[in-house]
Image 1 (tube, one colour):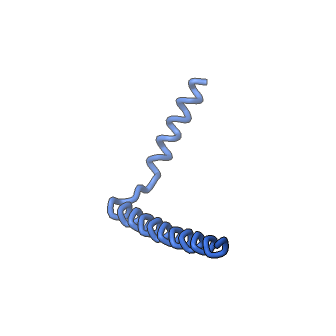
Image 2 (cartoon, rainbow, N blue to C red):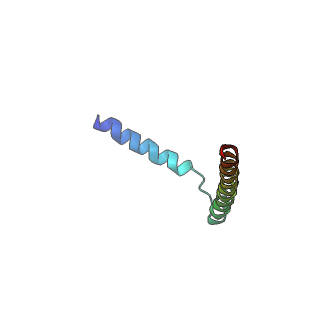
Image 3 (cartoon, one colour):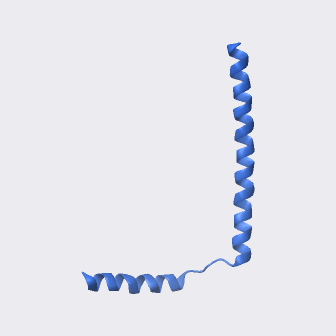
Amino acid sequence: MIANLLQFIREAKQELKKVVWPTKKQTLASTSVVLVFVIAVAIFLGLVDYFLGWLVKLVLS
């Protein structure tokens, strides 16, 4: 059991050496894209929520 665990750890280390990690510039660019997208979706959903709330009030009154 311990031998299997040690073999797993060795193989995991070998696989991690093969990973191509993004540069700081790539990470910042990806994060910026995600933040802009999240803000845009939040604004869109806020507007839809406001409009539907207004519509419900209009129908109920």
